[in-house]
Image (cartoon, rainbow, N blue to C red; front, top):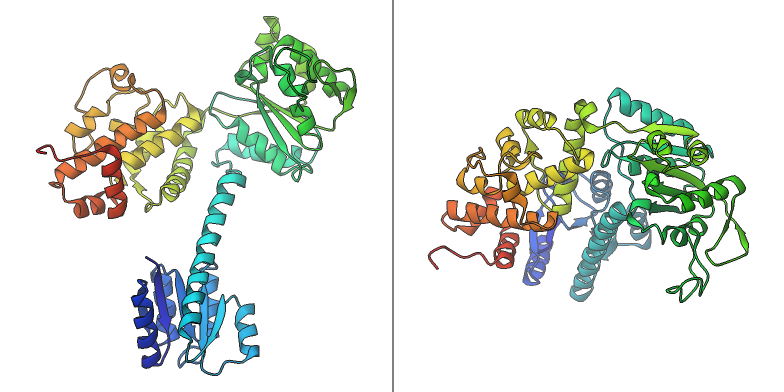
Length: 469
């Protein structure tokens, strides 16, 4: 239900508007002056404001300016008994959605309110989608190693130098590559990513250079390769150490001559591509073992950026964890939870075999399974990557302490992927809280800090019922 605020110093107007809008099932509040109205806007979340222009204490235009400075996307409909074209234009320039004269026409009012609310929803959805699709996550941390990486990116990104990014799985190599592209002169052109480890060796050449129709059995049509797609932009070759020797030879030629030939083709195609590469392997060791070409290594390794393991920069964990916490809570549409100081210390003491990627998953798990404040007991019970406690322990230990000494293999063996585990954990957590509150849905929703309607949806999704039923 949309929440509206009416700001007008005429009681009759406020009462009329409120009666009309409440009849249309809007939640409505009203106030008789701009000063108090502005305070309400700062304290509460409204979907739409209807504001008179001529008022005592504070002019409606001033309310509009200050409110939009605080909340730029908040829709405003300005109302005035002395409406002129000039006033309407001025209100629009200052950010108002629309202008209505007194006494308001009922049909026009309702249409304008609906359109303003629809526009507000679209603005919010667009921002969320843009953030999810296009925003490159910041490189978080202020340790010496991370500051050095940020400085190197600033220096190297505007050049055409090739960069080899090294580091363990999950440490953030892809993020470094994205920032090298974002800060380069090629930022307006595409960044094309290829995971060399995920493509079978017999298909890697086709993936990189494309192929002509009929060049092999399944080549039913011509295909454009990643080098061509990245023309003018950046090509990121992730896990380059897993590339076959034959593909390495062709990549070397492309780097030397800036030309490629599609599989099964004869025509040479010129490409203008900046290549960034990443690996979790020791390429010098791979060269010794005959698995990687020395000449390609030197072509790629013009600049080397090594991303340290999370355990080498534990001082950065609080900043990273807090950022993930806010990001994930926002995606889930729930209030941001808190992490206690003792929980942060506990997180810093974990081995983090999966690096930053693992930390992200752990924070997501803690958000789902913990109460409003994440404690060190929660970290011990739910987030220990070594598996000291299984999920069943949470049901038998309301304070989050470890009570089940079962093997972690037995605890996690039945889950095929993280989503399955997350659903199971969420179901058990909600079931435990419902039973603890004697199936009082309102109390449970408040206890775990989600909307009651959201909780009902979860109960239906997981098929939860009272044990006596």
